[in-house]
View 1 (cartoon, rainbow, N blue to C red):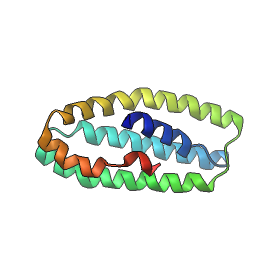
View 2: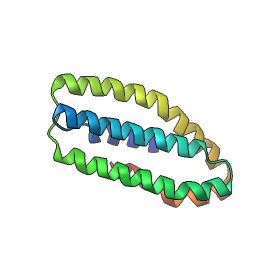
View 3: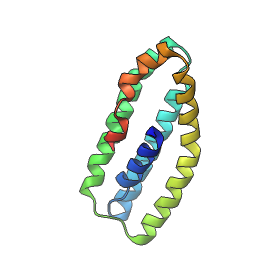
Length: 127
């Protein structure tokens, strides 16, 4: 459910702007999603989980910044929106399996989950 909400929020957050601003916003959100996937994939034990917390918090702040920027921009033209939707689909196909696999693995270790859960809580609301 988290992944679906995050993906929907990401789509909404990237829906604004003159084309250059919308493209930059989309690029920034894409980078954030890839960064989050990399962080979660790299968590293998309690030490790496503790090290991941400030990195997750930093990505979340960047996501909130993108959401603020998106609210300031008008909806893109139809061509840009269609292109971004296709790019978003490709991005989701790339990162959602990585994030889902990492989350499933993390969920199997209560100690790691306890470390990361506060940093991840409410992430879908960041967008």
